[in-house]
Length: 413
Ligand code: NAP
Image (cartoon, rainbow, N blue to C red; front, side, top):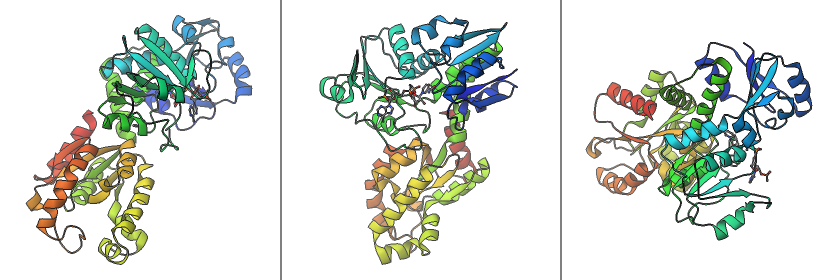
């Protein structure tokens, strides 16, 4: 079968990984410029296509039939070619509905704000209508009929209960960007970001820190992908199969990040875990020493802690853009909030915990040369490690068990 994705420009595609893992059939990537869409569609040299930005509306005039949901949305992201007829579907509605249900996020009778006014917003609007939300605001940079601005949202609607973020703001490689802060929305319960790269956007992290239910778009991507598979190959996948694909894709891309007190074993465990998973291992402190051509103790002595933290933040910024590696951090990485946000975006954060009297001390550790200092440090840092972590793993047992525990927790999320 001749199946694939059209869009422009086409970067690295999660859909290709997904579709080829599910079905034994090559999935092509066709980068089609807007001026070539007409020719591609009239030649019909495919059995099925997924359609992404910017062609979701441009393909509609070439269809012989359009499914009811796609008609309501006004955008098509899946086309099946059968008996010389092209039939258009929209699987984003299914994908977003699946994500909301999977995370127990109810929008029924809720005040919802959809951020953005593009193709994904159209699908989100159909979901909001299907699930009976109380009020649905569309929020955009441009005011329009039924569309409010970000300023109006902030000033007049601080009682929004559920947010659906459907702009590219916060997507790689501009992952530091954020539309606004959620802190003033006192009734907010849930925040859904349709972006799936990074796994958690800055806004998802802020929402989690505020105690909201918050999730990125990977589950939607996978769920809508399985709906497309159903159309192409007539195969229906179970919820558990969708869940295991989400987990497999997340683990493939996510970094595993070890944090914890100085001397708790982050380097030893990180190196061993990386070998176990056949991944690259990076030790932040080693990287800093290589950059500065001196030891951590010498950097502290010659330049002071502030200078060390600046270099550490630069290294964290660089590493947080990587995918699929194991990172052992310095114990003080949590001292700067921006480090924690960057690492959490695409990292599974493991707080490695070891009994205080088992922690290594010594002259090579500038901030933890004595046990007394360590106890005070633990009091200050423990809450910050807990706030940043996805999981806490005890490192008071055999190393192989520690490594296996990390892997089990990472894969089951
Ligand atoms: P789109 O049609 O291009 O619409 C993007 C919207 O974002 C437009 O309303 C645009 O506003 C707004 N926008 C762009 N830059 C902005 C900025 N700097 N500040 C404020 N608003 C900005 O894209 P789309 O298809 O709707 O997709 C939107 C996002 O959802 C993308 O990140 C996409 O990857 C994601 N998505 C995910 C899934 C999934 O399965 N997880 C599915 C579909 C889409 P203007 O109108 O003012 O230009």
